[in-house]
Length: 410
Image (cartoon, rainbow, N blue to C red):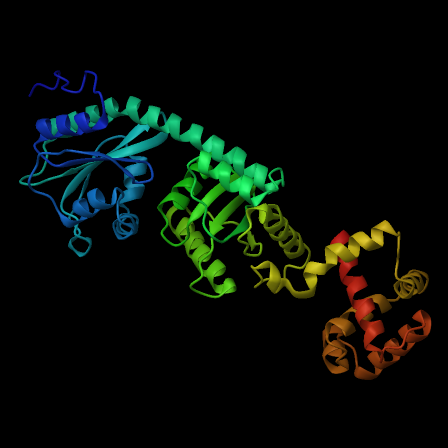
């Protein structure tokens, strides 16, 4: 067997010519994809094919059901980890025939894939060796395409940060700039921030980019990564309610990211939906504010994802800023805090538990592990020391919000 002759050791004007050359060598239909399963080229003169390949060619992208099945059966994991061609058995439920695939690599980074449909009989050792050579030949062209794509991504990235920081303040100006970038903006959008528990590495960023580009659940228009945060501008649909349309598609995308790569953010927060692109900064600030709130009140806001759902908590940063500006401390809380320090009591904790329990003495007593009579006595002392009427809703609400806003400062 002569493996010395390399039929791909020559220049190819484009990837379509390379795909045809692979077909001529292996006598099997060929498709070449980028790392996100977008079709780049396919051999043009074969007759045999299968439904999955037809759908890929028609849609210029591998169908989501095919990608999901390949991940489900461990094919993608093997392909991403292998330096040599791997064989994939037919999956009749998704219209996929017997295949051999190889990853196109630049060092450790996967640039794309070559897929070969085995029509008559399995490829032999010689053909598999030549397929690996074909992947090497495709590397330079995919690298060029990637460099071009990264350059476009850089332009999008800069544009997105201009929106996030309020540098572009006119909706008309923003839409004109998007048109220049050949970027189609949706009618309505929202900004979502995902917080990870560690800085986002280049490998993690590649996995995130792969998920964003292959998920059908949500249309991500722009994204940016900063330290340990992923920031998205995603399209919002008119079809369903605001809360539902934001939560479920993004959560499905996160589940897919966890299933495929074992990665998941520790928090996710979304700002309000807007149709004016001068409001991108506001949606971003809303998502960031909610993230701050969830850090301070993790139990109370565990199920909150969408900024308007945060209730009065979204007002706490403004209350805190007002108090800091005027160097204000609630005099009632100051008196009780001073009394606790001098007498080694916990009346402030008692007051907080009582207010958190909606002034329900029995619930508060159970939480404090004291008798109801003991709690009643403490509340009487709190009222005397602080000079407050605990039957006044206005006074209780003021105390409650001041206690909560203090926690924002911790």
